[in-house]
Image (cartoon, rainbow, N blue to C red):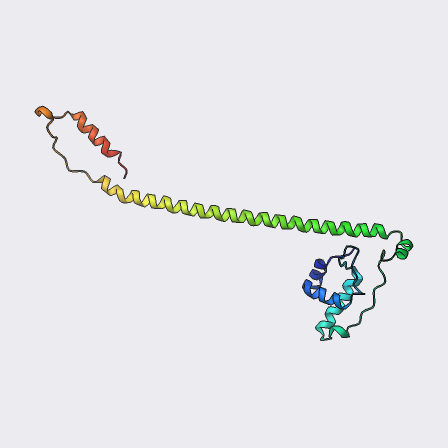
Length: 184
Protein backbone atom coordinates (compact mmCIF):
# COMPACT_ATOMS: atom_id res chain seq x y z
CA UNK A 1 0.00 0.00 0.00
CA UNK A 2 1.33 3.43 -0.92
CA UNK A 3 0.99 6.55 1.17
CA UNK A 4 0.64 10.17 0.16
CA UNK A 5 2.93 13.01 1.20
CA UNK A 6 0.90 13.97 4.25
CA UNK A 7 0.87 10.44 5.67
CA UNK A 8 4.59 10.02 4.97
CA UNK A 9 5.29 13.29 6.82
CA UNK A 10 3.31 12.08 9.83
CA UNK A 11 5.20 8.77 9.90
CA UNK A 12 8.59 10.45 9.52
CA UNK A 13 7.82 13.32 11.87
CA UNK A 14 8.86 16.04 9.42
CA UNK A 15 7.06 18.88 7.68
CA UNK A 16 5.83 18.65 4.11
CA UNK A 17 8.32 21.34 3.12
CA UNK A 18 11.20 19.24 4.45
CA UNK A 19 9.89 16.15 2.66
CA UNK A 20 9.59 18.04 -0.64
CA UNK A 21 13.11 19.43 -0.23
CA UNK A 22 14.48 15.91 0.29
CA UNK A 23 12.54 14.57 -2.70
CA UNK A 24 13.80 17.39 -4.93
CA UNK A 25 17.40 16.22 -4.34
CA UNK A 26 16.54 12.73 -5.60
CA UNK A 27 13.99 13.06 -8.45
CA UNK A 28 15.01 9.69 -9.93
CA UNK A 29 14.49 7.89 -6.62
CA UNK A 30 11.09 9.43 -5.89
CA UNK A 31 9.21 9.74 -9.18
CA UNK A 32 5.66 11.02 -9.44
CA UNK A 33 2.66 8.94 -10.47
CA UNK A 34 0.56 9.61 -13.58
CA UNK A 35 -1.37 12.33 -11.76
CA UNK A 36 1.76 14.15 -10.60
CA UNK A 37 1.54 12.99 -6.96
CA UNK A 38 4.23 11.34 -4.92
CA UNK A 39 3.33 7.94 -3.55
CA UNK A 40 5.52 6.30 -0.95
CA UNK A 41 5.69 2.54 -0.57
CA UNK A 42 7.65 0.80 2.15
CA UNK A 43 10.86 1.04 0.13
CA UNK A 44 10.56 4.81 -0.31
CA UNK A 45 9.75 5.28 3.39
CA UNK A 46 12.92 3.38 4.32
CA UNK A 47 14.93 5.61 2.00
CA UNK A 48 13.38 8.72 3.54
CA UNK A 49 14.23 7.37 7.01
CA UNK A 50 17.83 6.95 5.82
CA UNK A 51 17.87 10.55 4.58
CA UNK A 52 16.44 11.75 7.88
CA UNK A 53 19.09 9.89 9.91
CA UNK A 54 21.96 11.16 7.75
CA UNK A 55 20.71 14.76 7.83
CA UNK A 56 20.46 14.57 11.62
CA UNK A 57 23.98 13.14 11.64
CA UNK A 58 25.22 16.28 9.88
CA UNK A 59 25.71 14.84 6.39
CA UNK A 60 24.98 17.45 3.66
CA UNK A 61 22.26 16.55 1.18
CA UNK A 62 24.65 16.46 -1.78
CA UNK A 63 26.77 13.82 0.01
CA UNK A 64 23.87 11.41 0.65
CA UNK A 65 23.74 8.55 -1.85
CA UNK A 66 20.59 6.59 -2.56
CA UNK A 67 19.97 3.84 -5.12
CA UNK A 68 18.03 4.92 -8.19
CA UNK A 69 14.51 3.49 -8.20
CA UNK A 70 13.66 1.00 -10.93
CA UNK A 71 11.07 2.24 -13.39
CA UNK A 72 7.66 2.07 -11.89
CA UNK A 73 4.96 -0.12 -13.35
CA UNK A 74 3.26 1.60 -16.22
CA UNK A 75 6.07 4.11 -16.72
CA UNK A 76 6.63 2.97 -20.30
CA UNK A 77 4.53 1.09 -22.80
CA UNK A 78 6.96 -1.85 -22.81
CA UNK A 79 6.77 -2.04 -19.02
CA UNK A 80 2.98 -1.98 -19.13
CA UNK A 81 2.92 -4.86 -21.59
CA UNK A 82 5.31 -6.90 -19.47
CA UNK A 83 3.19 -6.39 -16.31
CA UNK A 84 -0.49 -6.79 -17.16
CA UNK A 85 -1.60 -6.13 -13.56
CA UNK A 86 -0.26 -2.58 -13.52
CA UNK A 87 -3.50 -1.01 -14.68
CA UNK A 88 -5.37 -2.69 -11.84
CA UNK A 89 -2.65 -1.58 -9.40
CA UNK A 90 -2.89 1.96 -10.70
CA UNK A 91 -6.66 1.90 -10.25
CA UNK A 92 -6.29 0.53 -6.72
CA UNK A 93 -3.84 3.29 -5.86
CA UNK A 94 -6.14 5.92 -7.33
CA UNK A 95 -9.12 4.54 -5.38
CA UNK A 96 -7.02 4.59 -2.21
CA UNK A 97 -6.08 8.22 -2.90
CA UNK A 98 -9.70 9.15 -3.47
CA UNK A 99 -10.75 7.41 -0.26
CA UNK A 100 -8.10 9.33 1.70
CA UNK A 101 -9.17 12.60 0.07
CA UNK A 102 -12.81 11.85 0.84
CA UNK A 103 -12.02 11.04 4.47
CA UNK A 104 -10.00 14.25 4.76
CA UNK A 105 -12.83 16.30 3.24
CA UNK A 106 -15.34 14.69 5.61
CA UNK A 107 -13.08 15.56 8.55
CA UNK A 108 -12.84 19.17 7.35
CA UNK A 109 -16.62 19.44 7.00
CA UNK A 110 -17.18 18.04 10.49
CA UNK A 111 -14.55 20.41 11.89
CA UNK A 112 -16.26 23.38 10.22
CA UNK A 113 -19.64 22.31 11.58
CA UNK A 114 -18.26 21.91 15.09
CA UNK A 115 -16.68 25.36 14.87
CA UNK A 116 -19.97 26.87 13.69
CA UNK A 117 -21.92 25.14 16.48
CA UNK A 118 -19.39 26.38 19.01
CA UNK A 119 -19.88 29.95 17.79
CA UNK A 120 -23.66 29.57 18.06
CA UNK A 121 -23.35 28.22 21.59
CA UNK A 122 -21.11 31.14 22.55
CA UNK A 123 -23.66 33.59 21.11
CA UNK A 124 -26.45 31.90 23.05
CA UNK A 125 -24.40 32.07 26.26
CA UNK A 126 -23.84 35.78 25.69
CA UNK A 127 -27.56 36.35 25.13
CA UNK A 128 -28.38 34.34 28.25
CA UNK A 129 -25.91 36.39 30.29
CA UNK A 130 -27.42 39.63 28.98
CA UNK A 131 -30.95 38.44 29.76
CA UNK A 132 -29.86 37.37 33.23
CA UNK A 133 -28.33 40.79 33.87
CA UNK A 134 -31.48 42.51 32.59
CA UNK A 135 -33.72 40.40 34.85
CA UNK A 136 -31.43 41.08 37.80
CA UNK A 137 -31.58 44.81 37.06
CA UNK A 138 -35.38 44.68 36.92
CA UNK A 139 -35.50 42.78 40.21
CA UNK A 140 -33.25 45.36 41.87
CA UNK A 141 -35.40 48.20 40.54
CA UNK A 142 -38.54 46.48 41.81
CA UNK A 143 -36.93 45.87 45.20
CA UNK A 144 -35.95 49.54 45.41
CA UNK A 145 -39.54 50.60 44.73
CA UNK A 146 -41.14 48.17 47.18
CA UNK A 147 -40.29 50.21 50.28
CA UNK A 148 -41.98 53.19 48.66
CA UNK A 149 -45.13 51.20 47.95
CA UNK A 150 -45.09 49.57 51.39
CA UNK A 151 -45.16 52.93 53.21
CA UNK A 152 -48.66 53.91 54.17
CA UNK A 153 -49.83 57.18 52.76
CA UNK A 154 -51.11 59.74 55.16
CA UNK A 155 -54.84 59.65 55.48
CA UNK A 156 -56.53 62.37 53.51
CA UNK A 157 -59.68 64.03 54.42
CA UNK A 158 -62.34 63.50 51.84
CA UNK A 159 -63.14 66.65 49.94
CA UNK A 160 -66.67 67.75 49.87
CA UNK A 161 -68.53 67.02 46.69
CA UNK A 162 -70.18 69.65 44.66
CA UNK A 163 -73.20 70.86 46.43
CA UNK A 164 -71.67 70.25 49.82
CA UNK A 165 -72.43 66.53 50.02
CA UNK A 166 -69.73 64.17 51.20
CA UNK A 167 -68.30 61.57 48.78
CA UNK A 168 -69.49 58.07 49.14
CA UNK A 169 -67.21 55.29 50.37
CA UNK A 170 -67.13 53.61 46.95
CA UNK A 171 -65.32 56.58 45.35
CA UNK A 172 -62.62 56.38 48.02
CA UNK A 173 -62.22 52.61 47.41
CA UNK A 174 -61.82 53.19 43.66
CA UNK A 175 -59.17 55.80 44.28
CA UNK A 176 -57.28 53.38 46.58
CA UNK A 177 -57.48 50.59 43.97
CA UNK A 178 -55.96 52.80 41.32
CA UNK A 179 -52.91 53.38 43.50
CA UNK A 180 -52.42 49.69 44.19
CA UNK A 181 -51.81 48.82 40.52
CA UNK A 182 -49.06 51.32 39.99
CA UNK A 183 -45.79 49.47 39.52
CA UNK A 184 -43.48 52.26 38.54
